Image (tube, rainbow, N blue to C red; front, side, top):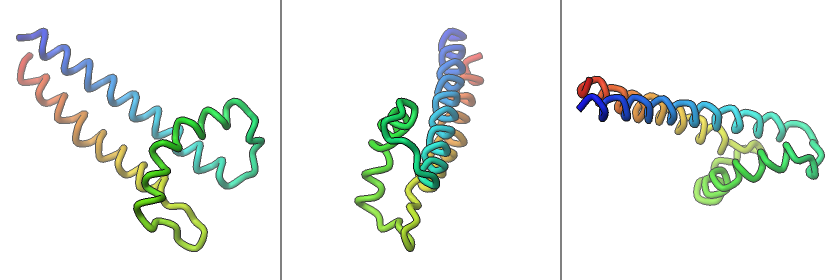
Length: 99
């Protein structure tokens, strides 16, 4: 049973790292929206292509634009923090039960 515990602990760690990395990408996207970057820059294109599948549905379904300010990155930011606090801690708790 300890194998399941170690697997769940490793899964919780990997999910935490992926969510943290995506959180930084969302922050970079928000910062890039304040300036006028070159749209043909590979880094800008990568950040846009990684974040747009998550941000676009939020923009279309919820009226989160307030006076020209896009609030969808804030909603994604809060969702990532929720997943880190709930999902990662739950997996870590389950892993502790098997160890």
